[in-house]
Picture 1 (cartoon, rainbow, N blue to C red):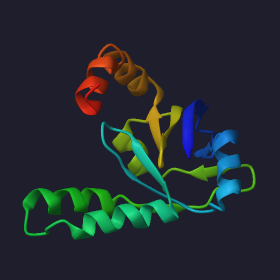
Picture 2 (cartoon, rainbow, N blue to C red; picture 1 turned 90 degrees about the vertical axis):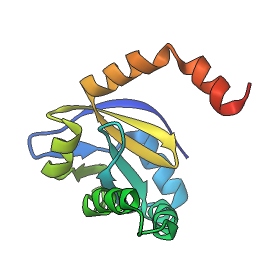
Picture 3 (cartoon, rainbow, N blue to C red; picture 1 turned 180 degrees about the vertical axis):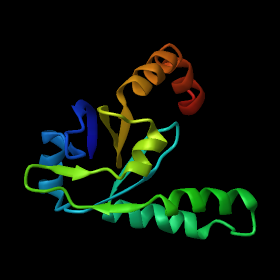
Picture 4 (cartoon, rainbow, N blue to C red; picture 1 turned 60 degrees about the vertical axis):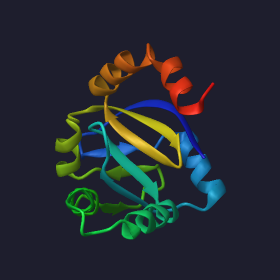
Length: 145
């Protein structure tokens, strides 16, 4: 559903723009609202409202008697905020999420199928540089190629 890598900057009013390709996808799929939250690897996860509900059901089914489950759910759900991009595709990323992801101004938005990830540009470049060399090995381990 969401694919690609797009570089954008947060404007003076603290807004980030949803890439035009993502806006086309949203229009085609009837997506108007997103939920942002703390992601993994120091990025921000951005889910459509429908996908958020799917993920929420998975986390609700995990045993809350496990400390790891409680900790994860606290971080994940306490960081959540809903956003509705304006007609130009702009939306505000709360400061606490920007702080979590280390975002000052320059960002990279990547489509990861069922979600969008928002990265600080330098953090993404570092992640990509560290991960690209092991891409084939990761694929082999995960996909039994």
